[in-house]
Length: 593
Image (cartoon, rainbow, N blue to C red; front, side, top):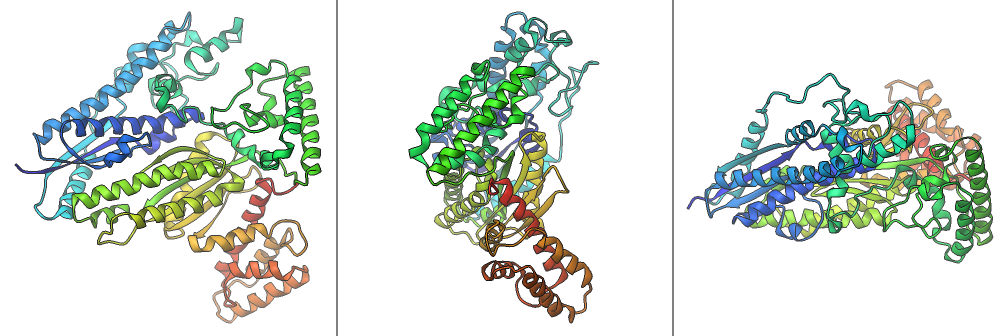
């Protein structure tokens, strides 16, 4: 019997995941694609196919499954098997949507406002499932895979378009503006009449002006359809909670101070009206002082979302009192009190030259082992992110998406790179070069539009690959004042980059404020391609550093980034940007008290 290779792909991926206004939208989007892929892979395996990717081990655990499946089919008609696999994935989506929409429709008074037929039709139209089956080339697995990949790419270029059956003159979804809202306009109150807005939130999971399509409603409420054992991460922690690590770290390692600070925090919470309505973090993200209260409560600006008038004045006064007491306790135990920063990091990691590496696998067994190695990396990525006080939204294959505090984002990126390098080294040795990892980091304000932060992280990842040449990191800093700044480099440059950030602390001998702009002015003054200017630029840098009384350690740190004395304008300008970015990072991670 002729053996076949089945390649099966489920989309859309990036745009679908990134279309999010809340953390739970983001989580469920990534979980849904993974779950559909898991269902398809399980269906293929149950019908006798030999799974190549994902490896069997990744189906036995609950980690994410990548959206592309490869299976070797020898036991039956491959086309019939592929058709059954597609049906299983579509049925899984239909079952999840039914569970979500049944719950909404059953809501007292508000459920009648769901346009169920349109919601079902929009969800059924969502998945882009493509697959191909090719004959296996005897003794040449690499050629078999190349033929299958070429056929899959050709199939994806053909799009199936059907007529839109839900079109109507109604508002579009707030998530992406693509599909019509399936919530009747009569559901939206002109004002919060008799708790109408709260009932809308409880029934549909939307705000008083937030229209959603069927796909958006599924993402917003999908966590209710997820089994408890699969729901780890079903509530993504808020961006404000991630950002609050900038101050929570002050007491995290002072176990002797926990009881005193927690007592002060409990008094603060008791002073807040309606404390039971405050946001909580998911189980597993408790803080020794805050417990399960979301770190957003530590930001005076965020209190305005829950209180107004005299209540807001009372809440902010209580917060100020708590932070003052906490600072006294921390400093009394010898700790350092940092600055509370509202910034956080979105981290995206992606493998480089993965296709070439997989092309180098000479047998199906090697390909399976490569898949197992990637599954091992994905599993370790979750623990890496957790150790750095972040939240892993998605980790599957060579892809990782996580939310992290500014203070730990670079260290986490380096640890992810180490974990990826180890997983590949422990995997099979193909004929091609081993793949590498590129990581993009976007630093954003916690109240910035979430989708913009996600898109910024994708752009930073692209810069790591195409500006810094892969096997690299890139950081895009987007403060509310000033234009975004992009910096980065190869992984072996990270230690000197971090040293430059550490040298921004306002201690004796550190790099002073304004130095970057003085050196940038120097670069502009000595612009030109005349090679004779290079040593002059180096001498001028020395003069400026001496003029500003920069210490020896900080001087060596700066020159470690500048390189040799043959100093080009481009290199000097790049390091000036790095100084601006790393000084901002030193402040945004709570480094400035």
